[in-house]
Length: 317
Image (tube, rainbow, N blue to C red):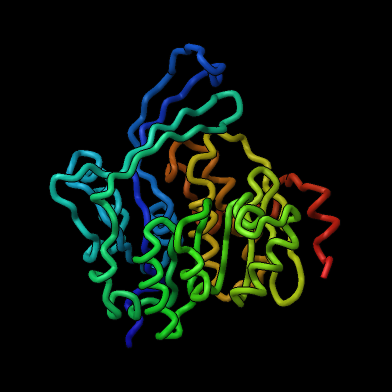
């Protein structure tokens, strides 16, 4: 089948309300906020915006409510140049929303979110032609039956699958056999395996499910990956952080770009870290997504923050 798109994403979107506070209040406390901003976001949607800004032909499949937040999200996706022809619209259903409190002193955020059940993605509406038209499929873990369905279709078409997973979802063990590139959050590997050592946890996951790369993001310390029998560690870039919202989503979009372009695993991690760091310099999940040249410049000249525990183990196998 002709590859009309470089990447197709199946998964979450959201419309965020950002609340900037001088510092996060103590439990039970009270604090004024400085600004309130309505901003598009969501794991897969933000990754797809990253892909299209990097020049990839991009398609998004997900579900969107018909309220004002849903309209804002759809306008953002369409305006960015992403194909939304197979977005599943939900009548009389509010879109997924999040309230994100951002501490101005650090840029760190706390998220409160809600996704109504009426937004559940219907797997039967995802057909092979919607997936086989792409060179790469990117998914998250939330609607497990839908992403499992999409990933199985990709596998039958020889299309690589990347996954962004940040928590344990019921039935996600049925998704992992179809994944080629696992890019998990910091806590997922240890929680999934009950193995406290993250290196051993990634080894166990890769051994059980056979994915090509088992990796995890490390927040302010970068990312590491297990590939071809060796651990690879990429320290984070130091930037003037305004907001960490969406950093992981941008990392995943950049990683998908790196896979499509045939980057080595070390270059893929460095590039994804750079794109994530640049996004932290602005407000919102998609507010600081930068160009390929900006990422390359940061890689060439930027200061980095390494975690010695990961650096010393990089060639452990």
